[in-house]
Image 1 (tube, rainbow, N blue to C red):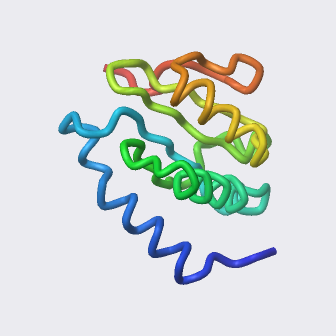
Image 2 (image 1 turned 30 degrees about the horizontal axis):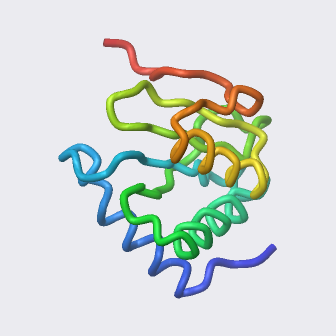
Length: 127
């Protein structure tokens, strides 16, 4: 299993610093890659690396990329949550690098949820 390099960690660190920008209105979207032990074992690093590479290739700087721990659905890892500004979050499951790039293109850039990979829309929080 490949390890994250210092360069990868630096890229992630730069993106994490921008996390508050979404709340302040500067970012149009946020992608959370769930990287608990189960997610990493299932391939979450490949998901993160695919996004980092695509962000660099397409010079995407208004989408925040961050990570979190386990989302509680280990059997559906790798997982990511997409939050578009002003919309309910969408949880995507059973991801591959190809699937996350389709989600980036169609949901984050195009505004259309990729139903075939989506598990749920909305927050788990109870108000």
